[in-house]
Every structure is written in structure tokens, then in C-alpha cells.
Image (cartoon, rainbow, N blue to C red; front, side, top):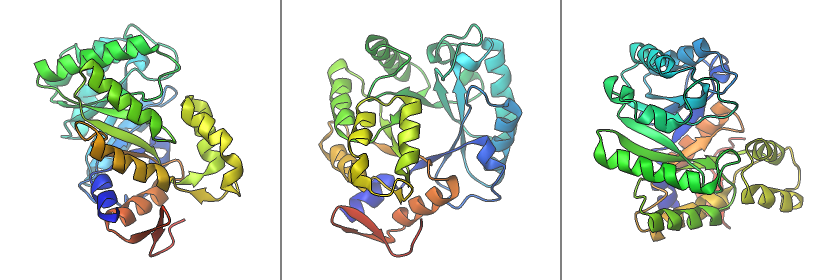
Length: 294
């Protein structure tokens, strides 16, 4: 299991919030691992671009969030892409619907994917959203339609699409969702969104904000098993279940690992690197590290 875990997370990606970027001076992970730069509805675009420049200058590949409903119009999308291209040669980008209210005329990620702008500015490694537990903003039938549309774009254009999922806290919904993708004919690879080590209270708060369905119920039901709500914990059981799931999936989903650093960006980087380097043993379904991280 140890080698399987190492192989599973080896090409991990991690998220960096621009406000967090202002507080750090370096990034302590392998240069081969790429970094998503978040664009939340209330974000200052200048801060996002500054974070992109920081990540690129440090020798990493930035993957910028491009939230459709935050864009004023398609011209705003193009202007943003031009600004990113001036800062990095990265061909990776994440195109999502985005949270919050629709700001302008761009209604969904499909508007951007079908605009031709990503090809024009050489953003051909495109990450798109996946919701194993559904979305509070989009009904299930619409989610299916969008996934099928993205499958068609992947097969018929130069854009190479990969699904990156919302985080969740138990494996069963993902396994069922993987089977659903097979049933409806979606063959896109999936990079699973994983909640990094954090206090149980923090995980619960993020779950409440995101509305992650069944996993939120799982957190609530198991709160008494965690002990101290302020002790940082990692969901080792979920990690091992996902490793196993990838072996039984028809096309090996999840095919990649994406970490949400709810317990802090730098600490999560140390945690990921320790796993990547094999600095742990597996004991009683837990990862026991050679050196204390949290």
C-alpha cells in the first residue's frame, strides 16, 4: 500500500490563495508539481496576477482559475488571458463556472471553452470542474450535459481536458460517480480533490460553505470520534480508499491528486512532500511519518 500511495500522489497539484501568497517567501515542493492560483468572487484581479508571477518566478507551473460567472464579458476573458500569458508560459488553466452571482454576460464555463480564446493564447491543457456529490448551484441533469459537452470538446479540438473534482470526505460518492461517468460515456481523466490535513472544525466549516452533500453528513455524524476538534488530522482512510478505487476503475480514476490546503499552505506542502518522498509507514490504516509535520 505504501508504494501505491506514493505513486498515487506523486504528480499532485495544490491550491494557492493570492492572499496566502503574500505571506510566504518560497514554495517547498518539487518543481514538477503544479500550483493552482485561486480566483474567488471577491478577489482582486491584481492580486491574482501577482500570485501567478510569484509562482512562475519560483520555477513552478501556475494553473490559474478562470471563473466564468465572475467575468464581465468575453472581452474581459480575453484581457485576463492576455495578462496571464505575459506572466507565464504555462499552458494549463482551470475553467469553471465559479461561485457567487453572475457578474456579466458569461453564463458558464462552456462559453469560454467554445470561444476559441484558450486555443488562441495557447492554454490547451484545460482543467474543468467535477462534482461527485452534485452542486448546490447546478442540477444533476445539467451537470451531466456539461460533462458530455466537455467530452466532445476534448475529442474534437486541440484542448486536452482533465476533470478536477470538488473535495469530499468519504470515497463512496466518488466511486458511484466514476461508474456514472462510465455509463454516460465520459472518458476524461479525473484529478480527485482531496481535503488536506486540517482541524476537524476547519474541515466542517469548509464543508458547510461548499455544501458537499453526503460527505458533510459524514463529518457531522463522526464529529464525536475525532476527539479534540482543534487537533489537525488527515483523512488517511479516504486516501487509501481512493488508491484502491483507482485500481478497480475501468480507466483508473482517479488518475491524479489535487490537494486543498485547508490546514495551511506551507504545512500541507510539507505533508505532501513527505508522502512523495516515502517518509512514512502505514500502520493500522494510518500514515505515520518519520518526522512530525503538524
